[in-house]
Length: 301
Image 1 (cartoon, rainbow, N blue to C red):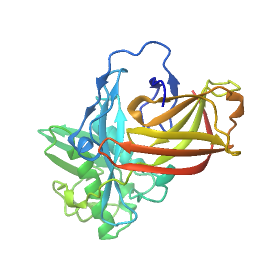
Image 2: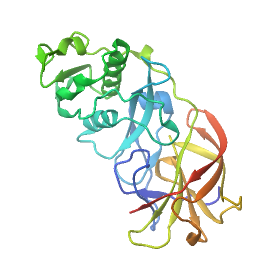
Image 3: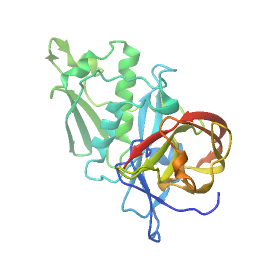
């Protein structure tokens, strides 16, 4: 892989997919291991390191489309400790339908559903959703998956012994003529069901994205994004003519991407086909390899 450098991620990290990564110009500072929940370590192994401040790793439990009633843990990172639990629920609310995961997870929350509040008291977390959530599919298996996803996502955090849900501030009664307690599994604390959790699949490549300065004509780097921290054993990035692009390749922050600093940046244009061949292993030993052609995305930062 050659020389390894750290890429600076300038946003709250959703596996670096929607954000801007930028090569670090100075000598990296002291590396500190990311603070991870037990659930993260169980499914994805030791957390990576960072020199960009205190970071937190956790998982979101997304409902499976292939096995109704089951949920799948997915890794996320944030620097925002003050609203960590709210960030987790917001990511669950937003769903996960990108890259190679398109169609794999159900979007259980009806359009327009919002978090009205998240309160913590005496080791209990209560999340209050807007009434739009009641428009979700009424299938009992689907509703149970929604409740399991919320309960498991919140109960992974230290000190949380009880998770409760409300709709418009209610755990019982009606909202717009619909029985709140019935939707919430008859009300009361949600009980996390570990038996509902499916183990993650082997690592996957998500996208190939080039980054450039705002207004710049040429890209700075080309990122091959994966779905979790991993070790890249082999990587080849080529054009549609199968000619390999020259340049140095680095690991990104959180070990979730390979970053190519191309010798000929003018070759990279939005939408062009990029062929990638890879072999990777994640932190718990799951290996994957493959080859594919991807349209190049270009983002500014």
